[in-house]
Length: 279
Length: 279
Image (tube, rainbow over all chains, first blue to last red; front, side, top):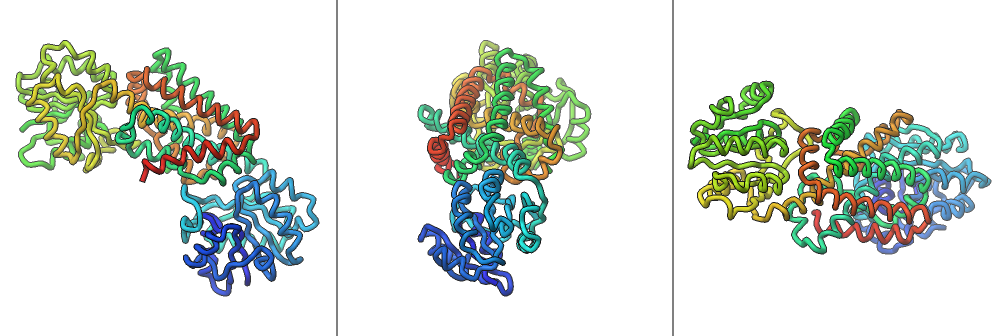
């Protein structure tokens, strides 16, 4: 079975690495960056590298793992070119606009809109990790628009990566992810900028940074192209989440300004309820 | 040598635990909570427990490890009661107001204002960890106001915990900590509240939370009394840091609203500079 992975970064590279270790799978890698294809081959993430047309030729499964703004464009081209039995899966972090763009394509039923929920703050082929998806959740959106055999193929693929799949609408997906993933990234990026700003005057400030700061700012290392595209494609819900976050921060600031320590303690106590969710 | 630790939570308990394993040290624990003293004794954090007066009697070193708003009050009482050769060290997370309050005390020279930079999001005696301070930084403020023998005692104590000490003014300390510690906590607490809010309508939202969310929201588990007191005592610099953070978030929001993805990508790229600091 030939599986072609388009985009050999953190996510595509990790999928390729896992699939390559499976019996009777030939993993073909496609990437517009020749540095990426070269690295992917050297690192053994793929069996072979190819141009897009070569990669699609004879592939039973095509996985598209590139920035979400580019998925919309490439997905149409790929669906135009594939055979009638090929399944095309995208693994982008936003789903509504991709599903909308492709909704009237004559081969819509060959497409499965997925989002395996896994990652790290690193990027590129060198960030690929074996087992990245083990015991993690995968989401499939608009499964009713995919052919049953395509859904079966996608489910089996994600299961082989160790994932369990749940189903939801693209809109639900984008709303939920705005809060539990995209907002976290924005808060980290902006925290990073805030402290980097002050560093211009206070050179030694980072000498005092501890594990707490490292934890909250970790995601600020994430890839600019990947994340600016995600934010752009989830504008509505991200702005909603950000507005709520900024309101909470302003409310907190007001209490500090007014020396209302009892109110601050109440807010922190309410926030501690997060223990219920995190182990 | 009798060392008395007042406050047997995460920090005081961890200091006690490390000191108790040292030769020729008797660690006496004092805490207004009888639950805490009982636990500390059961867990072997201290050799003995005592009332404040018993604890101070004959102690060569007194370590005050209670919420920062209470340090100011207790510190005066402790200095009034101790002998002429006793060294009193506080380990609170803010320093300016504590140093200011005590500046004219007749025994000011017996006091060392310190802040060992270590911790976790957990609290109470059960959170005490052996080796918590190993290879971490300690800060001493206004060392010129402490007697040389008190400074020597404090330096030796923190060295015995595995820490290296740097010196700065209380004002520098509070400013730096506002950015690299206190702001991180506020961002986490408010992120927690934002997502807990939306959970009221979207019950399943946390099912999709991954390691990124867990990392940015980890500090939201921290103790309400400890942190509301810290925020209250570092109002000026925390408000300054928060204002800068909120401005960055609003600027980011504006670019998203205006679909200016190039500007977003630039902000993220600038934020990536945090890689220079974090390993």
